[in-house]
Every structure is written in C-alpha cells, then in structure tokens.
Length: 359
Ligand SMILES: C=C1C[C@]23C[C@@]1(O)CC[C@H]2[C@@]12CC[C@H](O)[C@@](C)(C(=O)O1)[C@H]2[C@@H]3C(=O)O
Ligand SMILES: O=C(O)CCC(=O)C(=O)O
Ligand SMILES: [Fe+2]
Image 1: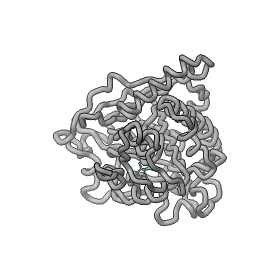
Image 2 (image 1 turned 30 degrees about the vertical axis):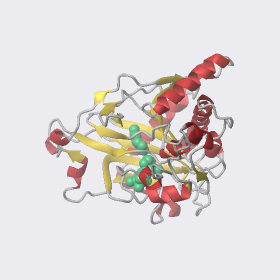
Image 3 (image 1 turned 90 degrees about the vertical axis):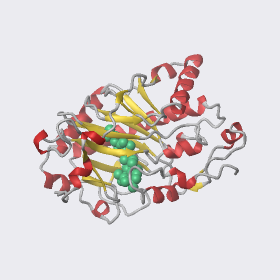
C-alpha cells in the first residue's frame, strides 16, 4: 500500500484559499459523428469544420453519435469499479508482472503517485500499453513482452473490446480533422494511431470520494487535486467518465472551467503531438481533475500515439498557410516521449521543441 510521507497530503490537498475556482464550461463544443457518417457530403463537411473549430478553440470537445455500444460502456464502468473495490494488496498483486514491475515502467496499478517525478494526486489507476491487436498490455510493443496482465479476465476482455471501438472512433475523428483542415492526405493523423507500432495507451482512473472533512488538509471548502494540471503528450485522447464531476480545462485566458460530466458522451483532447503536426493551429489543452465530490469518479482514457520511430514535424501545407513559419523542429516520438517523461506533470513540454521566431 502507498503510504504518503508527512507533508505529501498537503501537496494534494491545497488549502481553499490558494485554489483558483473554476466556473462551469457553458459552451462545450459538441460533435455528432452520426451526422458525419450518413453519406451526406454537406453534413460531413459541416462536422469536419466544427471539429477543426473546436481544436483551434479549446482543444477540447464532446463527441456523440459514435456508435460504441452503451452496454459495453456500462460493463467497462462496472468492471473498473469492481477492480478498484478490491483490497489494496490484491490490486497491487493483480498487475505485478515482470514488465510492469520493471524500473521506469509506467504500466500497471498505481495509487497517488503519478509518473516517476514526484507528482501526487487523489487517484488510483491502471495504465496499459495498447498492442496492434487492440489489447491492453503491460509492456509496449517492441519491448520486453509480458504475459497478459493477470487482472480479472472479464475486465481485460472488456478493455480489449473497448480499445478496438474507441480507437476506431478516435481515427474517425482524426480523419475529420484532416478533412476540415483541407489536407490532401486524409489519413495523415489516423494512420499514426492505426500503425501496428503505434504507441497508444489506455488508462483507467478512479478518484475516491474526498476524505472526511475533519481529516482533510484542504479544509471544509477546499478541493483535492485528483490529477494535476497537464497536457497529454500524444496525438489525441478520448475520455469517458461516469457522472461525477472533476474534469477542468484551462481556457486561453488562463482561467479554469469545469466540464459538466456526461456519462453518455466521449470527450476528446488535442494532445501535444497534434499541436506540433498542425504547426500550433490546434491547441493541446491543459486540463486537470479536482476532487470535491463525495461520489467516486471513474474515467477511462485512450491516448492515441504514433510509433516510436515516427518523425513528427509541422505539416508543410500548414506551415505554408502560416506564412512559412515553422513553429516546431522535427523530432521522433521516442525523443519527445523520453523528454516528456522526465518532466513533472504541470511542465510545458513543447517549449523545448519550439523554433526561434525567425526560423
Ligand atoms: C508526470 C508524468 C506522468 C506522465 C508522464 C509524466 O512524466 C509527464 C506526462 C504524464 C502523462 C499525462 C497523460 C497520460 O496520463 C500519461 C500516461 C502520459 O502519457 O503522459 C501520463 C504519464 C504517466 O502517468 O506516466
Ligand atoms: O481522469 C480524468 O478524468 C482525466 C485524467 C487525465 O487527464 C489523464 O489521465 O491524462
Ligand atoms: Fe490528461
């Protein structure tokens, strides 16, 4: 069991006085994928334009009409809740394969410690690599293979089914982004996530209800940090949660907005790699999860990433549209990820890859 050292709870539980309050996000952009898939060309173009506008605006939007069976989603949520309800030792043992336990591996079960650079949050989670077959694995393709994770067969099977469905949806959305940007190569983004070497991940987060007020270092009105502010390094993140609030996004003016939960929709985040590919036209959205609720929050996030050896650079046509200004230098995903994984959650990871203004 993870025992927090003295002072660590205070890092999660900021006193109410130093927390910036978030206002509810009134205008969550919404994209109905059903309207893009019916063979109506005009309808599809309108959806593609809405997707681009949302990526340029908040870098965040809601997706409906994607056709992932609601019954599968409900079963994933129930199985995840059942896993996190297990005794602590069973949860740790459940994912302690050689690959996940290897030093530096981010995969497996974790509690309160996020990444390996000292970030703490009021959260426990399961983190998996995603294989080409769309299965949840505790090692990344090309690295030491592990046996299938010994989490319960039913949870693993459900996650495998979920990954296939959500990856297809992510790729449909990536296709709409390319169309909306008027790119000739319509699969320029989606092919990276569909590649058999794609470095994608699946994360299941559980935010237990905040502790009793009398024990809470946050004080009676304070909130706990569930998952500290950050941007996602990958191309696209697709999130699904239960009906418990907590997700907040940072707006362009630096204020925070609370995203009303919606268990019937997906939420899409633009990630750092997509900001680079679009030469900064799309915005990798800074977000966080705050825990103030007495109900648990469960979220499942698919992170669509490129293959490690993939060279990432702003797309030439978008550089041209930007008056020839190339805002990021070329790098491989392996290079970016290694750099990102050395940073703390809240750091700006893209600034190391920006070009000087005159380049
Ligand atoms: C503090 C960290 C956790 C993280 C790796 C990092 O060093 C910086 C990026 C973090 C993040 C955010 C999005 C995803 O949840 C994640 C899996 C990812 O790819 O980058 C996490 C990493 C993690 O939890 O290992
Ligand atoms: O759990 C959530 O709702 C969001 C978590 C998140 O941003 C992440 O895991 O990268
Ligand atoms: Fe995130």
